[in-house]
Image (cartoon, rainbow, N blue to C red):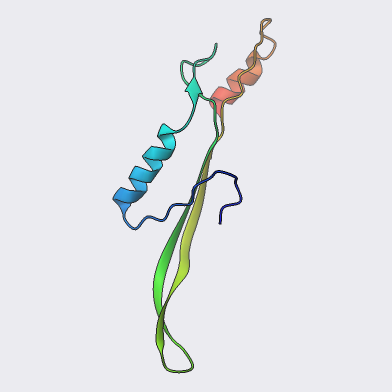
Length: 101
């Protein structure tokens, strides 16, 4: 199960299904304009990709079973923007560094 309340943990079996699922997740994100960005994410996005491999294993009893084993995994995070109101420009350097990163 997924430890994040309300998070989905879909299973897909093709590239097309994976792209459709990813696009659905993107469509559910909140975004808005700020003083510094025309479009800025207002919600976080976490995508965990686990690629499984089916392996045939023969048990001690001689019966062959198919088991899934983890082949590889990747986690992607896109955190919501954190622009703040800065009337005197004192945080300009932070914004410049943030834009570079």
